[in-house]
Length: 310
Ligand SMILES: Nc1ncnc2c1ncn2[C@@H]1O[C@H](COP(=O)(O)OP(=O)(O)OP(=O)(O)O)[C@@H](O)[C@H]1O
Image 1: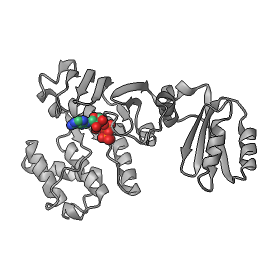
Image 2 (image 1 turned 90 degrees about the vertical axis):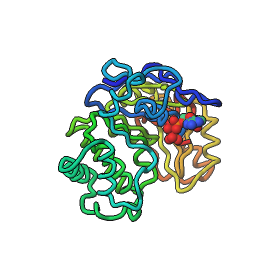
Image 3 (image 1 turned 180 degrees about the vertical axis):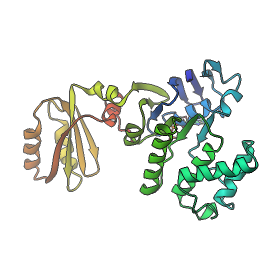
Image 4 (image 1 turned 180 degrees about the horizontal axis):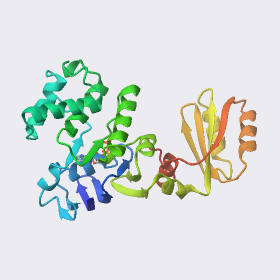
């Protein structure tokens, strides 16, 4: 339905999108996962025709969107990373304003506004000025704006960054419902792997402008099928333990977390005894230790040598 072919954006100093190939089928929920600066926003902006690619194509049902942007503008809802609302207007007034820009009028617009306010759960607060809203509520109204013209696809650029856990939960649940219950096609960008893991049927992992891996969550984690992860939880950060573990033969990767260390080791390598031994020598208190199946974050680390949240 929607496809990018060798989509490229070059700025003077860097390649923001490096021959990005991705596709979305009707009804799919697709994730674009990558750290800050990976090229997610650039890709979304090119798909939505806000940004002109240096090279490559965006196709809607096989036709060039670059040549004919109107093909996609009516079927696409875009939720940008930045909040784009008038602070001095109420939520309803904002929706009215943007609805008119989309060409929706009168009763139809009123009905549509009621509907989207219901979806984002802000019907009760619609008469309050946007400047009095929390960051999470503003995000929800931003999403409501993108839904006004009943798009077939919604593209969301990191919609949960910097908001409270409750709004985050609300947005994730809303995206799931839009996709599963209303059949809306979703392109969701995030640098939180738990979000794309939970919401998306297929995932593209991006880094430095390139798609470095793609597949379902299971397909991606099977890249590490011969390995397992060990999560060590600690009472405090233990840099000495990290250093010692790095020098243990058989430990493939040591990932430092806040009050925790994650190790990637070959499956069945029975490393726990060695870990406890080192901890004991250093008189380090381990509060828990668990062997886990690798996550998408581990896959990212394996492919790039870096943490997703670096
Ligand atoms: N207008 C611009 N001029 C120069 N470089 C740019 C411009 N816009 C983006 N870039 C660069 O392109 C790269 C990709 O940026 P992009 O915003 O697409 O990444 P992202 O994955 O969306 O990350 P973030 O979540 O931080 O927005 C970055 O290195 C960024 O600095």
